[in-house]
Image 1 (cartoon, rainbow, N blue to C red):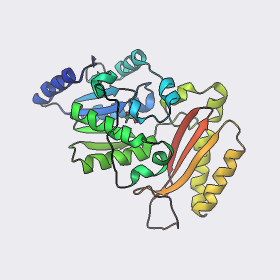
Image 2 (image 1 turned 90 degrees about the vertical axis):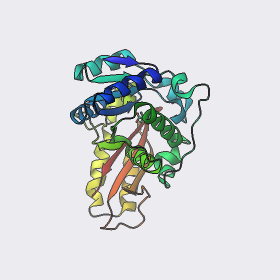
Image 3 (image 1 turned 120 degrees about the horizontal axis):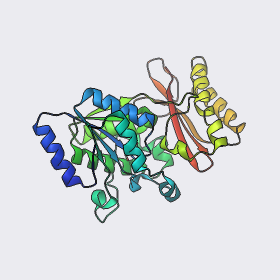
Image 4 (image 1 turned 30 degrees about the vertical axis):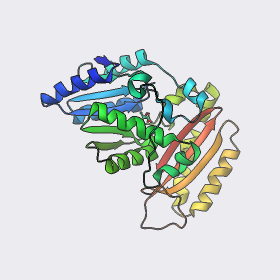
Length: 283
Ligand code: PAF
């Protein structure tokens, strides 16, 4: 497995591979890889000759300094894990901050038809400018045929689809189902920071989402939202930041339920200072 830390060398290598007719799949990550990431890599390998995995904790998408500092950085373990999937067809790009941002660690400003103002955009100032900046830069460097993103970050996935549409970037965006632990907790790099007590209680998030989905069959969005808020009040180790039922495409919160629309429920929860998100299709 080749590991690049420098964008020019990586681009040159990819140009050579493409000239020989290889298709390139791309899985952008912030590292601390887990089975969820591996499922994206496997999907990429099943559809492309080569998969590039970027490992880069992107400073511009963090609105919280402590979260950025504490974000796990485990490059050796990550590359070892990737080797268990395939040694020959995976390329790792683990750039330095300078390789991506030179001397200005700043985001470009984006609009994504309003998608950026909802949920994560409302609660994490500048988050999607940071995501848009890094993903656009990585696409320019890697020039992939297809890129793979998990649905755990469903809003991010919709925003990246909008990014490539608005900026006419020739890459196919593939959304992949949420990968869950046996007890239902959505896989996340942040899960490694949970204490035993927090980890034990964290599956409550998905359990509550599933019950909310069942209730949404017969009850209003307001009823279901209030019910979820009540459940979290009974769980002292988890602090609900938001539970929102929204239109799957516009991500606007539902006002009046319509049988013609497709809805999804989105949730953000704190376990101590660790922020966990999840979502579920409702209909
Ligand atoms: O989903 C992530 O891990 C990050 O937001 C991404 C897409 C790698 C950009 O830094």
